[in-house]
Image (cartoon, rainbow, N blue to C red; front, side, top):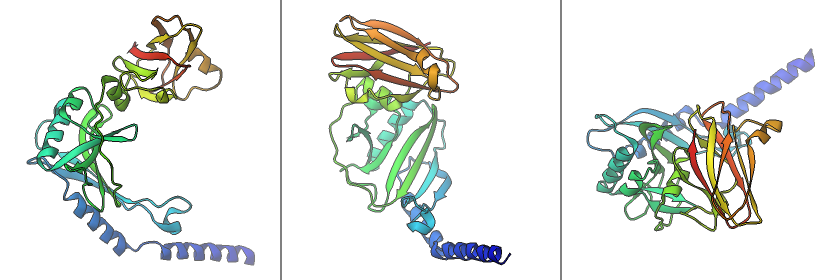
Length: 294
């Protein structure tokens, strides 16, 4: 009994120590004020407002983060425009133009290269997400990084997310997005594009042959691909629900013999949600296009 009381007292003491080592409510309140002050400088279209602010104080040191890394404070807010929302392409172009007029640009990233998103990228189907930076390429703030997101899934729902930590300087490049690059950024199987290739085709390289998940209509029952590769070789394709394991994996695997000409292959899929896992394994040279979902 005495041992149990001592153990209980030790737990209470440890909890008290952890509480004492954490940030006080006053510190967290000051942190939130500082974060909100940075967000107040975010560029807005005429008549727009930031609504439904969501504050996450993050964590610092062992007492708050346990054995995980420190996390900066984050503030997220929805953008209310005071006008009807339009389609993704036009809304993307609207914000790109608004940001430029306010002295900022929306920067995206492709293979570790930063580029300014333009109206042409929006028209081609860019998802409209990126980091807000000044026109000269410098950060939005020396204290925080500001990200803009246009879509919530397939729905237009513009919002800002501010991460309160000193931003990393980025070097702007002259990346020009292709149709296939934009398809990879959108991560949706809804139109034809180069899935994987070696040598580089339409901006897509063999480094992207590792399996990944793609968004697809939940009613999809088959995926069609077009494979082109040299003779005496073969390409292995896998398409399935991401959670399928074991023997069920084989139903979504196909080996395509190379003939030198384009070969169309259909792979049946049974999806539990709106995600499909697709992987390619091949030796160069080869080209795999996603053609359609049915």
